[in-house]
Length: 487
Image 1: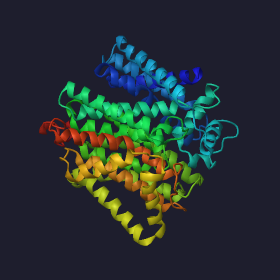
Image 2: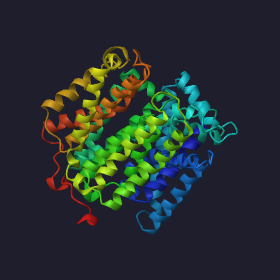
Image 3: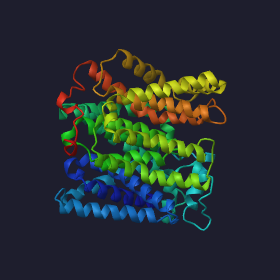
Image 4: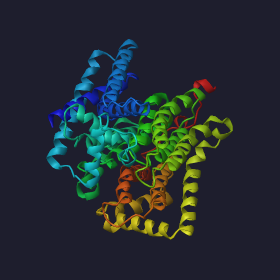
């Protein structure tokens, strides 16, 4: 446990240095402390992906790159006076927070070692060793971030990394709650109350719901995906609603790009987040190239290497499907590059949902297994998937508030990440060689965890908006104003 805590502290240092580049520890100390570990993990994963893609098959390279980026960020932050040595107290607070959460997770829940969990450990430990082979099917079965934890843990002489993935996903979710609460509030008191209510509701359901509670111990990527997907959306929302105090665009792109390394279908979810970002904020061509370089180039190199090597662990991540997903992930950037397309970007979220729904309906008409898979997913969510009352509560509430509730300023973006994410999960069940199955262990049932935090947050935002005290952002903050370079 102590060695794993040291590993977590190193990753937190990497994240703190990266955040120092934009001066976030001075502007928002608490948020910076919460974000340090998730951002450090993201930088570490990007570094590892780059090294493995370029055939530098050494597991410590990613860690060295992360430390280098962190030191450079600290130097730039101090040089530009975006932070001072006194701001290092934020790093100390971050370390204390990570240690407390890791001890708490270990005390409350022990790891759940399924067959998949054991394979994750084995594949991760093989990274950089003499038995490592890029053609291993494990690379396709378990994408980089979750196995990279095990590779990094091996450098610290750990048998396996058990609690760090869960704590990383948990902190990413907490940071997302804080960012969304601030983005849609008009005062500090409103932000505080909104954040507190969200924490209470989410914690209560987490404690009572097996599928959510088990993710604290299940050695897989669902907790990470839920955290980073929600955090990526929060950055998009924050970027679009408070442009005068926006979150760093590089940071937003880093979080969105990280989603590609967490799950097999990560590239598809990256495209949803990129459409959300470009619907909330108009990017100059230089900013567009900057975002695309972070979100697409390194993930593209990693997945392209998998495709070239012919790595295929499942029917989803085949070389052909990999090329298709890379193309889909690049679509938002390509579309936004053309000026004529920028005029309709605010409508793109609705078009994405309509397009996915059309494709799904076509599959329902063409394949019997599509109906079978979908019915099993719905059955798991309401009866057989160990969700308890969670989807009985938030499923109808989300639908009811979408149809009859007040309109949010970014309603389409919310619907895209929630509705589009659900449709993607349904479609993934259709293209599998076998449909989803009944039970808590089904991959479709577990992927619903990715949408759980957003379902709670969307419900709370809508309920507060019903009382007219939430989501009341002045219109000048909501217009899709072009950046200075485009004027």
